[in-house]
Image 1 (cartoon, rainbow, N blue to C red):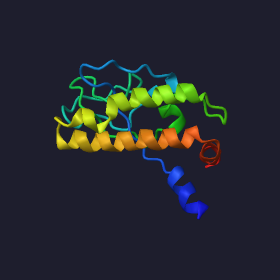
Image 2: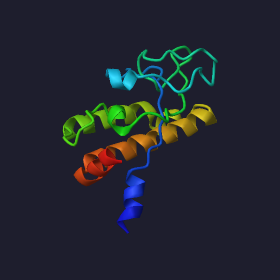
Image 3: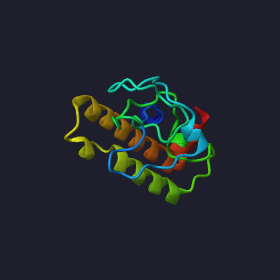
Image 4: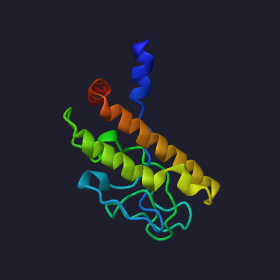
Length: 143
């Protein structure tokens, strides 16, 4: 029974872009700026700029980009890779990210951006739930 739940809790999606038009951009730490797995924007073709700002959106056309499969929950939620997590900071980061990528904000966008938004939002939810609970956080750390 627990193996199924643990497997779901430890699932890593891997998504990431950079800032929604007319929305405040998030500041990211150095771990969050490690680079983007996608070399160019799917929408405008502009080359990616690893390490520049937040990786959710294209810096040129501001289109939501696909999730980064190399990003882990700790870097996504801007936390140290440690069992000790500041849950207040975690909750604040969760709310910030959902304001950026929640599907409700993409209802008038292209189908591709809607799908990326759903994937990002799901990843943020999974990361938050996993890191919030001590047991799932510990399991995620050892995986």
